[in-house]
Length: 459
Image (cartoon, rainbow, N blue to C red; front, side, top):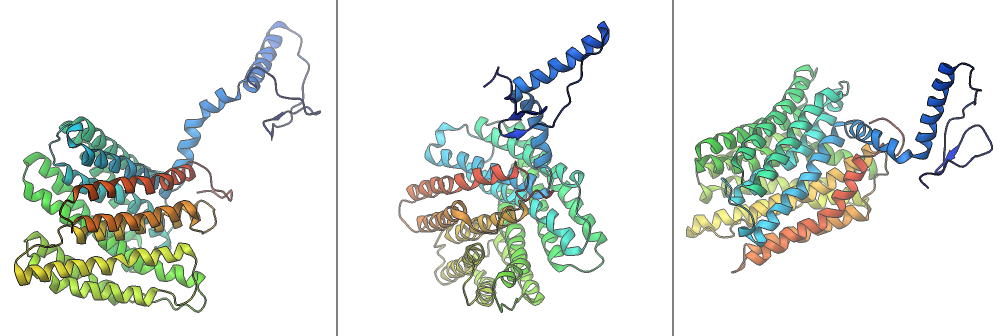
């Protein structure tokens, strides 16, 4: 209890809350007033520290947490992304429930919803993962804090300012949030670009991810210009660049490199399949889809979406192990199976419009992609990285399993909501479901990022 001294353990050390303090030798107080005063001061400070350990720990806590959080790039940037994935969805859910409860901002709520998820939430995870793996892919030394802390500071300050602006309606805070996000992105691109310049080989997966991030940075700049000009065409460009120029290329590239590698490590007799032609074939199709959407050529999207469906289906077929596999691997392939389903919906929507002129299915295809693919793989990949890089066993766990299964339900709710006559209740149910299934997973993840590795290793 506070105010009681630590129990004596029979030695010249103390046992406090089950933790042994270092042993000390008690010396007599030297003669002389000055020496006596100095020694009494030292004893008083020691007794005060023993009597009030919570106060001393509080003084050290912020610095310790900062060191732990910045010990590895994934810790800091996953922390940023995981925090904002809940905060941003809480705002969106509140807006869906009662739009009048929030002040009207300078940007329509739906556009802000797309912007935050595409350019702030998911890219935080991207930078945390890529700053970790780029040096390993290229055989270069790992990066230090000064490489990735500026990225994290830019991203978290940008997200906080944007979030406050959405609850307050402040256009100034929104502008400042976008500026800070641009700074975080620029720092991340500078770090990853410098690694590419030092690469002694041609690492195509790194080049592919970096190209997608450059396209994303262009989209972020377009949003900044839109805030100053109010040109709605720029906002449309921002949203389309985010889906097929930034997010899908990064997800597909990382899956192409990592999923067969993961499977080969745990599935006996598994032959990894990741030909570079598969990655090369998808890039022109992604860009063609993007170009057709930008010119509103939706009736012709099937020309590129059917090949994209075929390549995605082929990938799932070739990558899926034919034997038993652990849950942490299974969720990767289940999550990736949303890609051929999303491309099938895109192609069906386009063919129907080509035949009838009617834009059917609404936003069902994009939510099959964004919630089904991006949301499911976010849980699966981040769980794997978090477990492995925190010194914990590579197992899925009940919390992550709950989040992953919940994301399947949320994706289905949101897709079906586009096909019913009165969709708002379905939208609200999907948003509430997102918060429900993500909350335990985010809380557990944040707790891990704020603690040292379980195996005692640095990082």
